[in-house]
Image (tube, rainbow, N blue to C red; front, side, top):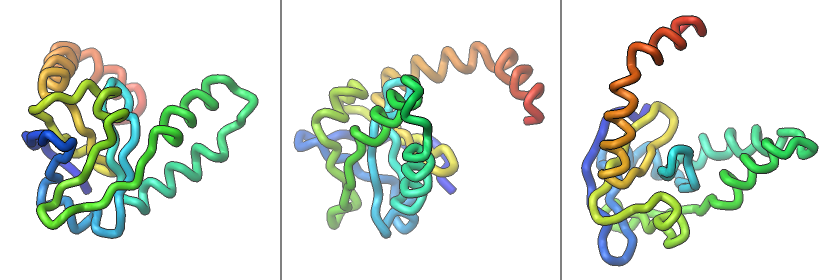
Amino acid sequence: MFIGEYNHNLDDKGRVAVPAKFRSTLKGGAVVTRGLDNCLFLYAKKEWQVLAGKLAKLPISKANTRAFARLMLAGAMDVDFDNQGRIMLPEYLRKFAGLKKNLIIAGLYDRLEIWDETAWNKYKKGTENKSVDIAEALGELGV
């Protein structure tokens, strides 16, 4: 399970260190892809295969399902860890997420999200300001 917020830096070559506590979960392989809200999603290979299988079964006759599958699948890239626990983020994904030097890696149970620090702080503040409304809506779903 991935949880927590971690500050990391993107180096000049486009590498970022993944928090040490998550590396053992990701040692069997990892996939990074375009996420939602202009961040990147990082999945353990096993979790990614489950998600990719679900996406592949969506009806191709629906424009929204085709678009979502393209966003997630066409943007995906296998990543390997170097000896220092870093992964290389492809330039097209760094550009998509607007990643600069300072990053936030956020654990969200089955995935990690990689955010530009400024974008994360703006998103988080907006979400915190709406937390009562969000909680109420989730309460209707049984959460």
